[in-house]
Length: 409
Length: 58
Image (tube, rainbow over all chains, first blue to last red; front, side):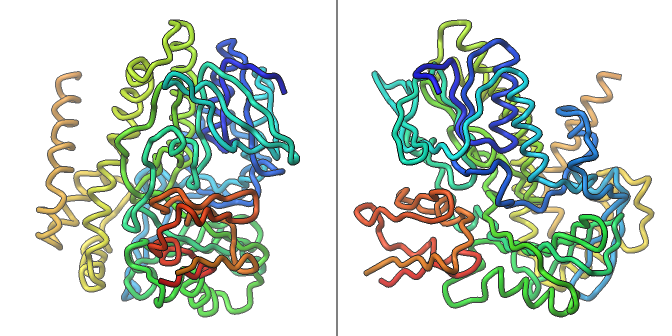
């Protein structure tokens, strides 16, 4: 480890590794640190990811694919089953990854691009001078180091400290987080081509239960609850999960336990400051409806890596410059998407079981393969007029898209 | 007033760190550290912990 780099990336998840890889490919001198002693472990993820979007970032390698999905099923509280083909299931269906292998493969790409990687190396604070972030204090095996960098990128996950150290408020309110528990179960009869979702206020208040196949009788079975619907004297995610697994998979063995918090806040006010950018879960860039965060994190990582290069080349790493080269870009893409999802989430969390069932009934007999998003929305609104009002912004947005496409054609 | 983290129960996921309004918590590899000089004993971490490993007494 040297004393000075162009870029210091804190956290070697998908966001950090892609940021490090991108910056290193541009010829920058990059240090990527990970506080855990193993990259990718422990897992805190359901591991589902959209195929097409993933291909934009990396070449698919069978080593980190556990299941190749054909579609998904949603189960409403009264047991109505809605089946969706892959193309319209949303961004998070396609492959089920082995994150332990996947995350290491991404860190390996960063290494191959020329970045230096250090594990069991934790940032304990930032070096801030003249109102600019100039590096960080690190700890490795009990010894302290000071590392200076022109730009620091915080990719330190849901438990992010980097943004806070620089005065960026990333604290999530209970309504802004899904609190989750997941078991990797083995020896169960699992359809390996479909992922399943269960909704309902008894099963997962303000969230859902998921089953993501992981190959040969294995699956990630998990539950996420909205933080504002949980409480000190109420059942915890782990209690809901135990109930579900005991009923649905009484004979399966639990071979791994996973816990986690998923940001579902939509875009936050500030994700950069002089000499610093935050990306991925640290910047609360995960999707408020699906909870998916891998692809947004990789997109943001790429943008931040490119932004670091542009800003350093221009000799200007000020907030103003980073707003122009990073913030603007991610807000126009990821930011727009997660804010739209936030509107849907805010509507969804207020539905009672009757509402959910009536929505499911109106979708039950629809042939989904040929359905567009607008048709889907229309079918939903036939069942629930109030939903139409709550989601009117989405319609405006969809209408804008239609007009834009028409003008381009 | 106190905050207690049961490290035998904790799944070190960091959700509590994400919701702490004061930045009083930190996930250090496999355990949570509390800076009691900053903690305001608000109980949000206790409320959202997926396993119930945190006990905040007001």
